[in-house]
Image 1 (spheres, rainbow, N blue to C red):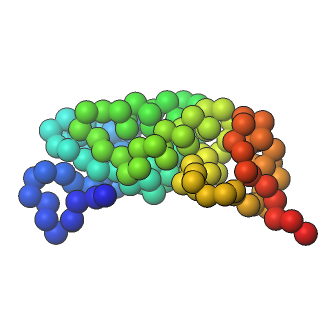
Image 2 (cartoon, rainbow, N blue to C red; image 1 turned 90 degrees about the vertical axis):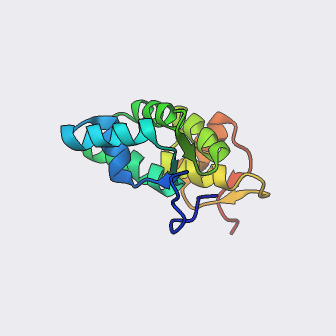
Length: 142
């Protein structure tokens, strides 16, 4: 659970996508230095929605391969000062992404763990989930 934004007494702060992007890419040297200093000196909390947006930006705008993006997100989430919302969901999503499922779809599937199934009209997702052994993914019955 994230800390209260109003109670930011120096313990932990949440970061936005642009901070993570600057940290990972270094594309703006001044902002990258500030982002890296922040993460080195401060406990930061990162939501799954920030990671979802980060993945999209790195893959679509920076044209990085999904496996490279997944590896970068895994390294970032593993930093000593980084706390990720629902680490287990992220870990499952990254594993499935590295095995060929779109990261957003993998996050949806991982977040649904514990449910009796996952229903989608996305036939390629159903096929990919079955291929890597994720059970309970199906299209709605007629």
